[in-house]
Length: 318
Image (cartoon, rainbow, N blue to C red):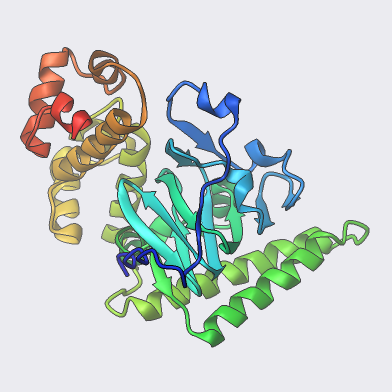
């Protein structure tokens, strides 16, 4: 689901609500902020295990407000009632009752508005936990990209209840600090929840098939590297060296697996990063061009216009 239409205002519908913006938030420099589990440790309505994962229904603790944030970790959220409108990677979505949203590491999120009766239950899994548990979504690439394009799905009542049962049991086990194996039990329950959520997404996106081949694994590692280094490096040779492959072989594999050239993937990630910086920060275009490692602002402007169809200045003002 690409997102529902925002309900039209009428006397019979829930009022829209924006959390009050504090003076501190109003004065905050519009740099792109990062949200991670460790940055939310001061919130009283969250249950944590180290910096590995957290569970909460206290949405206002996020304080997304009017500026975007970049998410460090994986977030699953179920809208329990009402609705909320947000942007994920610059695309708008409306989460309504029984909608499951998945926000992936390195995606950007911006709060727009919500109904007065909005409530959500969400789980956050750290990138470190995903990697250590070998749960990283890029390991199942078709599902990974399908979720990126379709982060919101509507659950059946049975699917909703199943996930909420996992969450309730997780909360209970996370609070059992006096048991020797309580933490490990919680970790394994979280893995089960991850697989359950992934399977639900797979069933709602029927064209998703698991990635198994060596070439698909190479593509997965390539995408992870591009996501990490696209602000500094745009040469295929750099990524080929990281993967201990020749540039020619890497280009061939990427084309065979994805239907796109390696350079096209690099450009896609770079342009997405540029768009986020232009829309989400008060940095000058020169500063953005330097952050993205362009030799000159002019080179950055030409590059951006080639792919976005307009200059950085025009895009920022659009």
